[in-house]
Length: 226
Image (cartoon, rainbow, N blue to C red; front, top):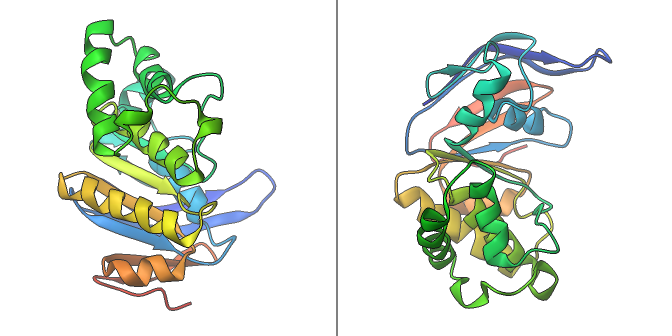
């Protein structure tokens, strides 16, 4: 599903964000990528959904080589990957349903399919009754659930969640993590990028720890030790 081989990422400024990272994530896994700020977590996430390309090494996602992928192929790759961000990235003038539908519309999905998929994903995140509300009318946790519904709209094989609970309180954090675990049970691979020690230790899932751009530990049912 996901394989990184000796991956390094050096920004134009000379900053080394990742250094010789090798990693294999199997289909259906739930993996937490952890580390302090500036250790390369977000850079790794951006490589996984082809926002960045590696300076050296290989990033293979579902058979696609991110380092060699053509620009026109990137949208095809991203249909296999759902992305959830810390700041939700919802369109404020669109309703909940319209935000989810928009992700499909830009990919050319027809109205008949929209009417089928949007209610399905809103049911998964328990927001069907708020389909006609706007983001400003929702709590932070509800906004993040909309973002997750949008990420699910293409039925991706993988979800990359980059600090998805960073703006949420403890109760809403638990809701989002519970939802990601539920989605994982459907067979979707989850890559959770976080600095939240309590979340990671409660999950009891695989934990990959980065420090200064390098993998310093990779443990099944691991803990956040730094």
